[in-house]
Image 1: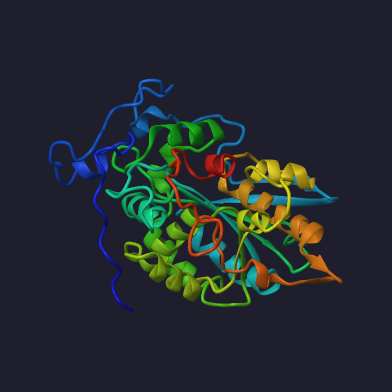
Image 2: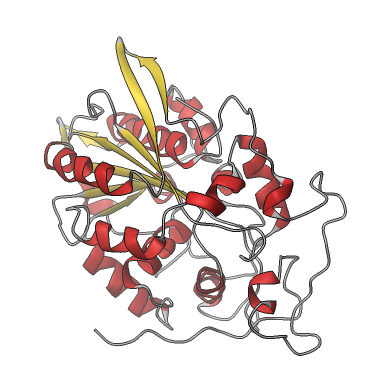
Length: 354
């Protein structure tokens, strides 16, 4: 497979971020980065040590969370370096019976803008590529259901926690603040987070990718799939959007983006982020908002509630209307032609602001 293109150039108008990751290797030329600190942040220091091991009730250091849902006990299981291989073995068995996979990621925000006019064709993808090439994934949630929307028994959701060091890796401060408030323990991410290289190898042989029988369910997921593609290929994203979608089609042959699906509906019934959509559809959240596991479970519930309400005719669902489209990317009607307001937070926050 051909090597992917190199990184784009950073704009001097890039939003605030932690430059330690770059400074550890090379000192940038004057004016290349704007490293203005976020003085309004409640976390004065951005070091891993400043986030002590917490007693947050939703801390992702807790091995598993259990919930009662429709008369059954369901579980969100946290995965770290020490149990990732064991849990991926479980998933290889689960996906055979539960081929609907809802996905959500947490990542360290948006730290840079490409040097191009916002009206230029491909601006949205160039911005996505620039940030995903620079940054690292923090958390991935995967939830499993069958074709009728029934969750996998006992443990339908795995929450993968990746290696991320606040003393080394780049981030937007407001994204980190949000994730800390939601229960993310960056001390643990730094010390025993999952190596993305190992996870990419495990994901490649998991049965989750390269198989059109697996349906990937998501919400406004351009960045989510970009991070997964980065993990799978261990390379920067392709240099152009067309090549990005070609790679995406190879690894994820069947994608459903709920945000795109709602754009096909008449009226304004289902506007807003994931939480509002789920509320409108009567879906129950299990777990902590702004953590990838809970958000992936809610995404799955929202998808099946939405297709039941709006996309089922004579008992059948025709997914040709919405499959393999991403909201805001490609050539569909949701791609904005004018300037965009860039995300400043990780995906959990952006899901509710998109």
